[in-house]
Image 1 (cartoon, one colour):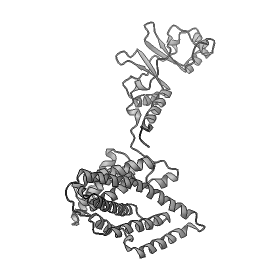
Image 2 (tube, rainbow, N blue to C red; image 1 turned 90 degrees about the vertical axis):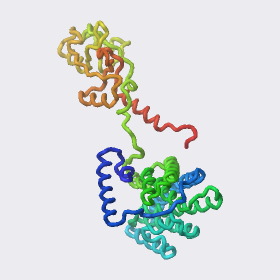
Image 3 (spheres, rainbow, N blue to C red; image 1 turned 30 degrees about the vertical axis):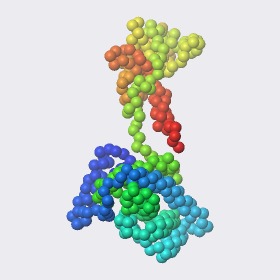
Image 4 (cartoon, helix red, strand yellow; image 1 turned 60 degrees about the vertical axis):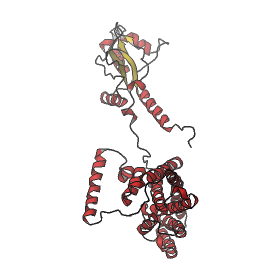
Length: 406
C-alpha cells in the first residue's frame, strides 16, 4: 500500500500484483528466519472508549499541523544552507558536526531509533525525557537532511510523532482520567498520524500501525488520528515532504487519485444543440455563396450536415470538400454528390472517451450525435470545444470550495 500511495500512484492489477508478490516473499523469508512476530509488541487495555477516540482524533489533527511545520522547516534549513558563502561540498560536514554535537548531548537521537519507538509505544520513558527527545531528534534530523547528508524520513517521523503523541496522551490522561487515554496508544497514533500528514499515505500509515504492533484494537484510534492529520495537511499544504523537492525542480507530481472524466461523462452532457442542417437539394454553388458571405444571415461552420426531405441525416460535407468541388467546376451539382454519406456518428449514451477515439481514428473535429433507435435522427453536435468545456466543468466542480472549508 505504501508503494502504491507514494510511488506507483495507480490502483491497477499491473501495480498491485507484482508489489504484493514481493511483499509475500519478504514476509515468508522473515518468518523462515524466525522473526514472524510483531516488530514492536505492545499491550492495549481493550478497545478505546468514544471519549478516548476523540482525544486521539485531536492528537491526529495536531499532527497534521506538525507535519506542515516539519515539512516547511526541513526545506527552510535546506534553503539556509544554500545561502552559506562556502562550497556545497562542505554542507554535509557542517551538518555532521551539528548532528554529532546534538547526539553527544542527547544520545537517543543517534541511530535509526527503533529502540525509541519501542519505548514510546510501551510508555517506558518519563515525559521529560520524551519531550527532550522530540526536540533534539527534530533538530538533528532537520539539520542532517537540510545539509544534504544522507538520511531517512520514516524513522525520524515516527520518533518525532511518537514523542509528541506520548506527551499529549500523558497530558490528556492527567486532565481527563475518566476517558482512560493510553499514552502508549497515543504515541502510536502520533507517529502514524505524523507520517500520514507528511507523506499523504493515509492507508499505508494505518496499516503500518497495525502491522508493527499486531493490535487490531488500535484500528479505530489509528483511523481517527491518521484521517484527521491527512485532512489538516491537505488543507494547509499542497505537496508532501516526499514530493516537495522534485516539485521544486519543475517536475509535476500527482496530488490525488483522479479518474479520467472522459470515461464517465456521457456524450449528451458535452454535445451542443443541433447545427442548422442544409437540404440535399442545395447546390455546391449556393453553399459556396453562403460561405463566401453573400448571405449575411448564414453562420460559417467548417462542416455541414445534410438532411433529406424527411429530415434525416444523409451526409456531411466539409469546407475542404466544398472548395475542391468548386475548383473542379461542379457548382451546379448537389452537395450530396461530393458529401460523405457514410457518416461517422456517436450516440448520446456513449462516453466522451469513445467520441475522442473516433475523432482521432477518422481525423475529424466534430461528431453528429444521433438517436440509437434512429441513427439518422440528429440530436446534437459534439465538437472539440464541447469536450474541453465538459472537462473544465469537471475541474471546476472538483475545485469548488464548500462553505465552511478553508
